[in-house]
Amino acid sequence: MRVALSGDAKEIVGYRAIKNGNVIDVDKPRGYAAEDFWEPIYARADGRLILDPDEFYILASREKLQIPPDLAAEMAPIDPAIGEFRVHYAGFFDPGFGHGPDGLPSARAVLEVRSRDVPFLIEDGQPVGRLIFEGLADAADELYGASATSNCQGQGLKLSKHFRDFGRA
Image: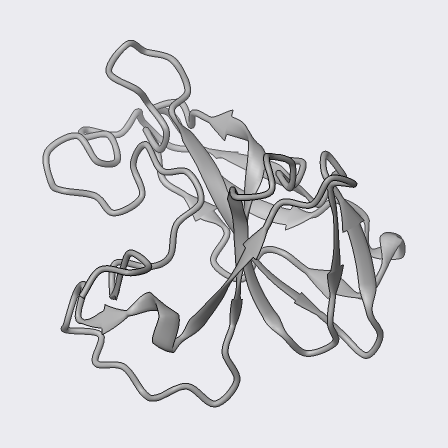
């Protein structure tokens, strides 16, 4: 998977966590103003982003994904030798993730990114992770997001369900 950092100057391509934010109650969906916890990152003309050491970022994959009904997937590093950063803190994808109503891939992977020790430059389209697929004993009885409301099905860049959109009270 490759990181998506391109867009016009007004387009948000990621978020950086504000250090030492308050504690949140995970039982309060949409209970918190995003701007109290996150700083938006806007696209730059050069498509680059410098990850500051020990900062936490939310970015998205360029590609849309679709996990088949008989597989699950895990995000893994593309190559540990490319640098000291991590993109796969919660990188598990259930069968059916990204299945759009028209049968086409509909969801981008949200990347939870942290650089270690030194600043790290990433560029739009740079490979940052890969999917490792695991076969299931049988196809899933129910695909991810098929019957229940899912925060991730059909997603693009987004924060967790605990945060309201920027500027919304």
